[in-house]
Amino acid sequence: MSQEYHITSLVVLFMLNACSGQQAATQADPVNIASLGQSEITEVRAADAMPTYPKRGKSIERTFVHQPPLIPHKAQYPINLKKNSCMNCHSPAKAKRMKATQIDASHLLADSKLNQHYYNCTQCHVPQADNKQPLVENYFSAK
Ligand code: HEC
Ligand code: HEC
Image 1: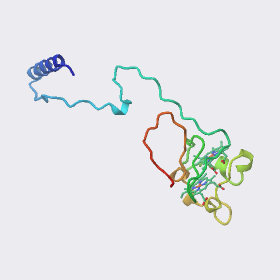
Image 2: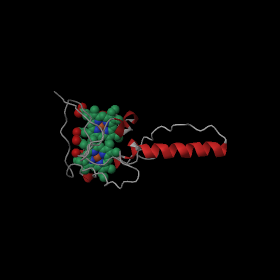
Image 3: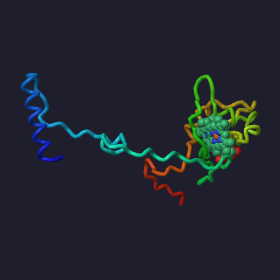
Image 4: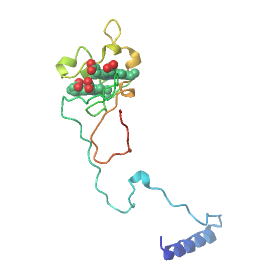
């Protein structure tokens, strides 16, 4: 911030003080705009790269035994009280027709119905996309 700007803002603050008669802060904290993508508010920034998922029908190699497999596609399918959209493709009844892997036997009760403990799929399964700009640095190694 330039010296000149400081002086002008001080003058403006002084004037505001004088007009309103209220106690205004003498020095405003800098505004944190990191959540806007770390660019100046006036700057036009190129859009982030779209996430790219593995080719259709490909599953992602697992890195450890009993790892909940990563989801190789977008995961914004609604899971709520009324419906579980994941089951539209992954239920034992529909998986074959939808060319998807059916849910693990551990997710099923003896009568082949979904065990409700497994209802919230995305609590364990997370989508994995090849994002051009990683949002979070990750140094995970299975070794
Ligand atoms: C439109 C159909 C469809 C829907 C809806 C769907 N999937 Fe999939 N899913 C697939 C297909 C096709 C594959 C790739 C083949 C495979 O590996 O099962 C797949 C793969 C997966 C895999 C990887 C399986 C493996 O063995 O590696 C997981 C985990 C998964 N999906 C979870 C989910 C979850 C959780 C939801 C809900 C948020 C969901 N899917 C919704 C069709 C679907
Ligand atoms: C409590 C955690 C958890 C929840 C909730 C859960 N899963 Fe899983 N899922 C797993 C684990 C762990 C495995 C791997 C099992 C193994 O290999 O031992 C798995 C395996 C799978 C597989 C691969 C099966 C195979 O034969 O390769 C699919 C598909 C799947 N889950 C889909 C779903 C769907 C759809 C839901 C929601 C209805 C769901 N899961 C809910 C933990 C979970």
